[in-house]
Image (cartoon, rainbow, N blue to C red; front, top):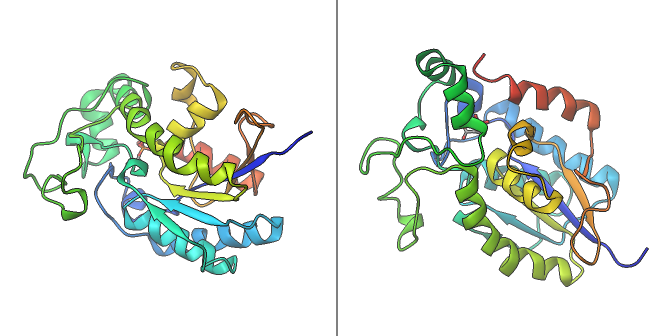
Length: 247
Ligand SMILES: O=C(O)[C@@H](CO)OP(=O)(O)O
């Protein structure tokens, strides 16, 4: 086999709102103590596997930024260059941001809850500008076309230009690229890489803090479809936990 590219996707460790079962989206909540431990462990897994990132891309949210910092510190790769973009942010959860997942499920029913959480193209209701959990006045997004709610389809539309213009060139330069981001922004990248159809992507969940390594061929097709989790047993348990949230 010829040259392959190495991409590592890392969902942030558990956040305080993951622990409380609240819809988070663009709300900038910190990692929980457990989440910080997961991030550190993620870096150890990278080191043990001999996967050494040369550059890291993160969102503008502290749970992804802190996860990258902690993982790279424990991997002894804390010194590598970093690039950040709102285009890697979590899916904007609209008016659901700050709401309890179980309460929303009880109020709207299982079907609507799952459409909002996992359908490809049904966005949640839009957030009201100026409301408590809106980001419209946040200086980090000044001048950017930021959303008021997103379905996964819209995440792909805003994440793919960043993938093409910033991440692909790093991979083509032979760098091992770490992307530290979020459950739904990483689902968008995985959908693109693995060519997952709009219906099937609903069933795909990404666990917190476990590096997912993709070897990509010259055409950026995954050598192993779905990539490889560095701790497959822990990943399987954590995937089931994400799928069952709100129950
Ligand atoms: O609340 C969120 O922003 C996301 C990720 O934590 O949740 P879900 O898995 O329900 O899409």
